[in-house]
Image 1 (cartoon, protein in one colour):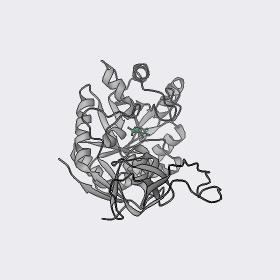
Image 2 (image 1 turned 60 degrees about the vertical axis):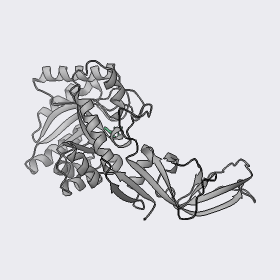
Image 3 (image 1 turned 45 degrees about the vertical axis):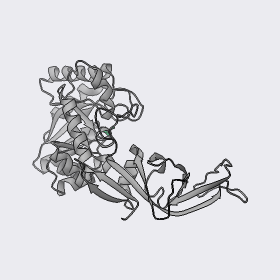
Length: 355
Ligand SMILES: *Cc1c(COP(=O)(O)O)cnc(C)c1O
């Protein structure tokens, strides 16, 4: 079969999303599934919807457009900071977006009025991770301005932690968000439908808290696709961590020295590699590289070592294992490897369904 290849087990994804939805629902939280790491793959999106997901989120408007045109029967949320230059597409393809700039919200309002739509706005609140978000002391001012606009409706507050600054979503942070929501509701006499507390990294907070307070939504990607939470990268619940398998084909196997020989200079990527002499070694080359996947994020199923990679070759110490040219090596993927393999047009995607 064509390779490099990413085998996608839709059955495992379906099972993961069912288990996680039920888990978060047990304390009143709905999840929306973030499809960015799988590039809004339509087979996967279909599987998610068939498993009961009603809200799908992505950070690229082209991905929301693809799902919308691919007749994925869900509502779409644009995450990340929306681009002023894409306001028209955002109104067209997203029901809701996460916002932190008044200028963008004004532009959304403009296009929503033109298209006779009401675009829903969740305001992002900065709580310490220092990526997107309005400083808490500025929220009231912004809310006041939004309420004067037609074509947009303020439907919630959200925050995003554990992304840029590695700041954990703790009880204190979640209570702070809930408190801000209550102040806003009271002051402006309105009801916020969504209090969107974060991402897969909220797992630990959710598992240990006795009261989720006002938080009623999480935006989850990684834990559904990789079965782990992103703070300790530990497997969670009974989730499968093998919904995705990367495969590459051995194109050369030879016993060669472990030390390169000749005059040394920089390698193809401008590095000056250092090697340890381990004598002769059974070396294998597989026909994939950085153009296909973030090789450092792959873990081989067999007990073999990855020696290094270039654009389209990856080198291994095969350590016996009786491998021959043409054999396929299999790997598990971390978040970065999954993101890159899904994004690369050179990686073939195949689907199966384990019940
Ligand atoms: C990527 C992202 C998520 C999902 O994060 P996971 O760790 O994959 O669960 C949620 N919210 C925002 C704003 C994001 O950018």
